Amino acid sequence: MKSRLKQYKSLPLLAGLFALLAFGCVSGERGGNGEPDLPDMVEVDLSVGISNISQSLQTKADAPAALPGEQIHSLVVFIVNTDGKVEKKFQPNLSNDSKAQDGELTSWKSGPFEITGGAKRIYAFANWESLKDDPLKDIVATTEGASMPTLPPTVFWESGVNKISETQKFLPMSVQEEWVPAKGVKPIYLVRLVSRLKVRMRNNTSHPITVTGLTLGKFNTKGNLFKADKFSEMTGKGYSIENLFKDVILEATMEDFTESDWYYVNESEATNGFEVNLETSSDKHPADKNPHQGKKITALRQIPRNHVWNLNIEFTSYQLTLLSVSNENPPIGGYPESSVTSDGITDLVCTVYGGGPFTITIKELVSQENNEGDISERVDWSIGNVNKGDLLAEAPNSVTKNTTGKWQITGGRMVGAATEEQSATFELVAKKDGAVLATFQIQLKFADIFSQKP
Image 1 (spheres, helix red, strand yellow):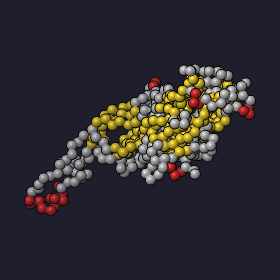
Image 2: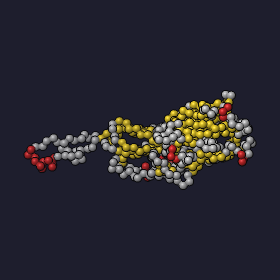
Image 3: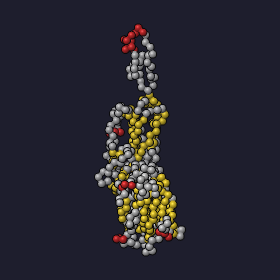
Image 4: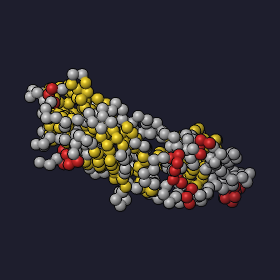
């Protein structure tokens, strides 16, 4: 690299103004030896990797790490100046890389190169060919020295993809960030635009159950090209994942869960939660009095990109009803809030108005196969697995009887400044004589104190 030319420190007195005009040099003009005064150059090295899959949603996933085919298949990186010109472009030829061909390349390095100093913007994309209608095709073809084209704010992902090895629909990734070059290695972390989910089922009743239909949704058909604070609005009616566990027979008293395939979905938001429509049949219950089917709403109301969601569905012979959910600490100038209905809470979705520490009171536990009545006060209760998610600062940790003999769940506390988009779950386990009768998934939500209906 040519060294920067220094300004002349002095000029002969007799040269006068003409000499100053002829020989004085400024940045970008020619110096005393006729060579241009070049801008500072910085030697750097790019290292491109992938952001780790984020925390599990709703229920802790078994495999939070990436699955086969969820890594880099194709890659392009643009470094753009403040004038909007592409100063550097990297698009490695990965056609002979066996890992990349299988979507298994986890990182790539550029090697040392020089770039001018000053503020830059980095754009990086991987696996853009999997996006519907290939919206980045012409953008990826942009060359060095050209103006960086306007990028689409949202892109579409093929709905319901679940077998990467068969479809070759590798997961699209993106990242953009500001950068001021400094000598050394610049790391870049790509973020997957989609999340993956699966449904897990277990039959804990004394009789077989046949799943005749399961639909989960609605999910967005598009998403933001880059991570944003606000999710893209639903396009049309969205789409659902249908026919999960179609005609699958769940044997009685299963020890392990039966799992669906993994499915990939766009980041999505549902105001009241995502719908789970379940249809089953069994010899035990007539169709019009079947307690193991119907529509449920998940406590989870947002699926951000690059997350994992395991939705557990467990059939039990017992029905749990919660009496109330109350926060223990009142807001300033207010009173402790409690949500309770005459029928109790049967969907096991517990909303804490105002957040903070909370108490959940159990109303009754009844068998759906006999008429022995409420047995909630005659069983032992405990807390099972807890997924604090992004909602809980402290997990529920105690189940004790109150002064009226009702069991209460305590110890849980929501994070400060909680939002309605956050969620958490925990298992409530009922035992009798040391044997597990049932395990219930309790879903937690936050709501503003002023949103509670009188």
